[in-house]
Length: 276
Image (tube, rainbow, N blue to C red; front, side, top):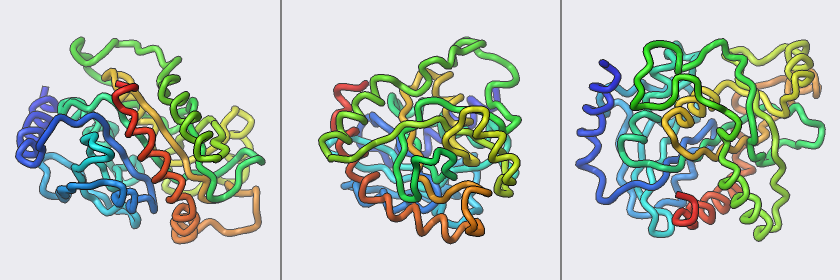
């Protein structure tokens, strides 16, 4: 029961900064922290000040919660996330998801930087995730079960909300942007995949590979949140190009997609009354 007590204490701390009910949460991946620009009336809180929150240790993850508005919809933006490879447990990685649920969030938007496996993808492309493979060896739902959270054996068939994906596609069409969809695979990291592992993951059906997001999806779906997730193709995965993989280069490629990300999220969340 300690996790529930911790979430309650975190919620009590944050309520002093919240002016109205929050409809949506956004979690940013590497290099995507400037998504903060789409918010107005912002209030920012450092992770280190929030009771029971873990800390970010990776460049490109500033470590702040930002409360604000997007087109008059109240949202919370998580600038940076927690990864398994930093030494966090699945419970620590997904603690913010539990907290967002307690704050009244109904829709969660996840973003990440990922290696592209699909030959149709190019660095800088924004891809709408439609399904995933969990090769991390971890699952936040393992352990004691509490009926008030969700079902013991959740069905994952529609984890990535078909309705939200439909709205994303309609929004992208209005933007004249070809929003491709793909299957994301999470590995544990922190090393990048070997060329042999990339071939294996591709054979299993994945279009993208990265080190985050799936744990958050598992918890969010379990708790009944509607999920929409995007990958920015930051590089071609190992063995698919001659370029050496460096985190700094990945951040640079991700920044090329920020304009698309900002416009997509602004317009999608602007329709939140249709998707709650």
